[in-house]
Image (cartoon, rainbow, N blue to C red):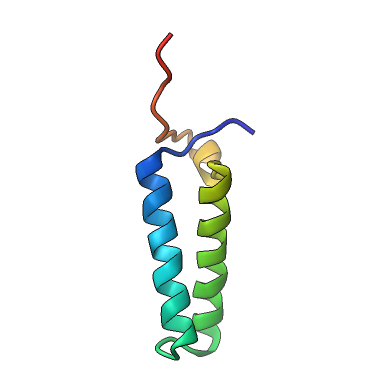
Length: 69
């Protein structure tokens, strides 16, 4: 896997995952929507930890800064 996520993208995904988790476990979001959002938050967390998003590859996106040569 080639890294395709920049640091800003990773930080935003972690924050969103934390917010979703807090909302779910405090009971603000429940039911099917809550479970779907919790799974989405988990995906955001995992993709930010490995710095790779499969959807970015499909759409040809890359938010990672290029390394100087």
